[in-house]
Image (tube, rainbow, N blue to C red; front, side, top):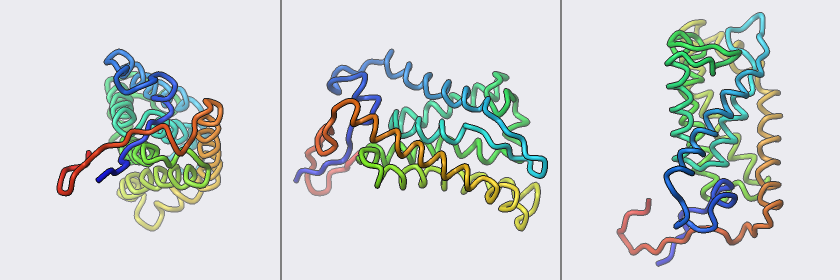
Length: 213
C-alpha cells in the first residue's frame, strides 16, 4: 500500500534538489536562521498600556519558521530561541532576556512557540502550504496553539476572566493580518520556484501495520 505521508517544505525546495543532498551543516543553518528570524521580529514591539502582553512580530516569525522549515527543524529553532533568551541573549520582545520572561505573564506564549511552529510545520509537510485555501487554516492552527499555552499562564497572573481581555481580544485583528500575510507568502513562494503543488513530495511505501513516521 502506498501512502503519501510527507512533502517537501520550501526550505527543502530551495536548498536541496533531493533528500540525499541534506547535510548537517545546512540543517544547522536552517535551525539557526529560524531562531534568528524570530529574534529579529521580536524587536518589532508595541506596548499596550492596559496589558502585560505586547504586540510583536514574533508570532509571524514562529508561524513562517514552522511552514518554511518543517516541523522538526522549526521545533528545534524555537527551542534554540528560548534557550538563547534564557541564557541572556536579548532576543525576547523589545530586546528582553532572562528567566523572568518565561516566569512572567507572557511566559506561556513563549513556551508555546515550539508547539506552534511544529504544528505549522507538520501541516506544511502535508502540503497545506501549497495553496492559500489550506495555508490560512495551517497558520491559524499554529496561532491557536499559542493561545492554548499563553492564556492559561496569563490567567494565573490576572485571573481567568481578565485573561482574554488582556491577552486575546486586543490581538485578534493583528493575528488575522499575520495569518493572511503568512498564508499568502507560502503559496507565492512555491509559485515563484515553479513547483507543481501536486508533485514535489516524498512518498513512502508502508505495509499494513507498519509504523508511519
